Length: 91
Image: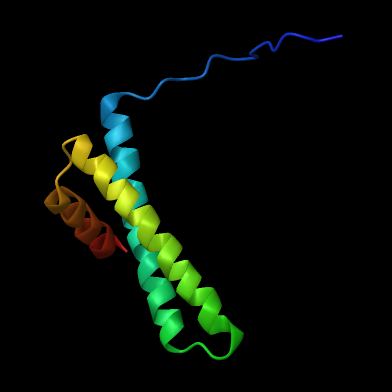
């Protein structure tokens, strides 16, 4: 009755450089989401106050986790900020 799982294609393993890029990209995204939640909280009314306060807490936890992970991999905060500034200038 049980069937074995068969991969249809080989899953590509990420290189160390790709993993670093992914972490940096996620840190920048999490930081932007946190800033957005903070801005929305400032203008929230009634039930939305609770919603945005939970969003802030969740995004802060996510950002803290990603920064710890980046630190373990030797990614410096200055590297992330430099990439973030280049990204904003390109837009």
